[in-house]
Length: 191
Image 1 (tube, one colour):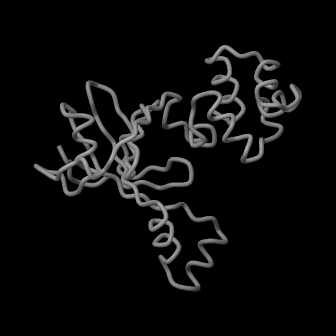
Image 2: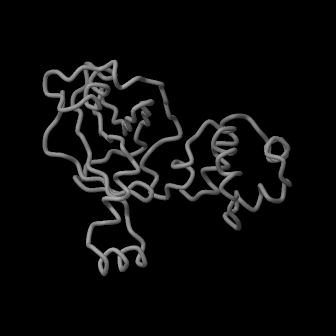
């Protein structure tokens, strides 16, 4: 699904016409029509406002692989409130196990940024792997695939939040891409 298709679907899901949406966004109706027909893209500040207004994530709007659904649950947490026990290797694992206590399986994921050609060349000629290390230092969160009651969820845990998105299509591969990130499923589960 393209950005324009996702925008149109999310706009309709909250019951807004193009004109109502354009008024709330403080842009022209023709700008909205251009976005929805994939003839233009909003700037980053409008993209953030769109995501908030339509109750979807920016990742969902920009992800052309269509793996995660529109529905996203984001809850505030305090990582310090969780204790490592059982198969949990860290507090991030403990958060997911507490959120899904009866899950069929909880697979941790390893995340790497998908490098553009320029980034790959820069990385290769400076110090191979340095850009992914720098990226992982900026994103100090954990990612999981959770199988629960016949559904599959993509979960991200930070120090302050747990974000849960139901997958729109089952992820069965051990390696897959969502947006600008490549994920590798770990061979072990934490539940």
